[in-house]
Length: 465
Image: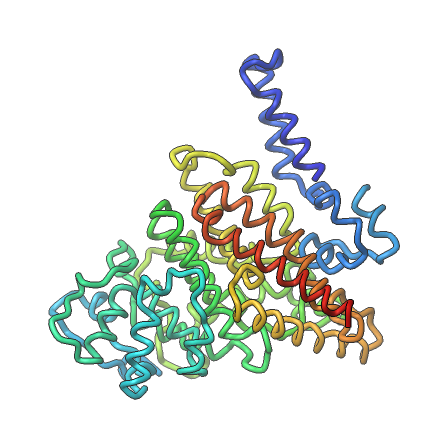
């Protein structure tokens, strides 16, 4: 992209052998570089070869926030509550006791189902990139988000509680690995946390083929997998906040994207002034529930109620920032930002602020990870995503609106849509993350390459037919 070329040129001038590498020149060049990175001109972040195929209008719209017609593409780029828990008391603090409770949703399953889930939701199995979220929904279709969030955010206590529920002999908490967020100096009300996530799960729209609680559960697990690939490089509190953000990042998604909201002057668009409409709604709803609770209910959903007000405001700001970071229209600028600031740097040169930015980037990549997953997740998520897109296109046609890219069931070709999405969005994003977390290059990039070959083969078969 033009942005990348400019940053590379500045970096070349900053090398010790450069004649412009004096202290004053270095200071000025770094200032220019910072201005570039923080600039608001979306067009300079667009990959130069993205404009060669009119079929990339969807990518331009969704991931660059630029609406253009196919014939002007080239020129545009140029210019249940806590009291129902079964408690396991080991004489610990009340916060740890809450962590040791077994979810009633798990306890209500038969022993065979509990045993399968116990294996699926082990900390080590959840870190696997080829984890299949649909194995969880096959056991409990109603509670994928709650179960996965409990297993990840509640680890190792959740795994210990499952073992005790199954009456496993000679098990100790120390036998299980996990994040152990209960020991953070935040006095997290663990019971309230999972009451809260139960309501969040309820508020995901089950009728959505894609943006539903299954997707949220998948994003939590995928983000957990990416975090584990980093070899404990992030602060525990930051990990806790980003996982909570993952759980709420699409809550109340109506199944129609930001473009549809703006074009129809929906209540959401009017409430959020057309800016990151859905992302603002997700984060706003998440904190209304947390702070205000449910109408006419006495249940406490604020699991951070013991956190001092200034600290709570800081944590709230970070969760909101992370959810807003999932706005696809900011994609290319976010990729270039992480590449220019963190790509190739040793971890001791990446400070706490930048590590949080990397975590937000990882959440965004978990949100678009489906084309980087193995079969059968690859095909299942693709079909669900296109089903939702086509439902929006049908509604746009009915309302006399321009049908959004990739939303016309009569024109969109599945293989071509996926090839463009992977080549211009998914693959370059994960290449950048691999510069920060090398294990991504080892475990994920080969899967992406195989999936490109798969969709290329599907395209050839469709053309032959």
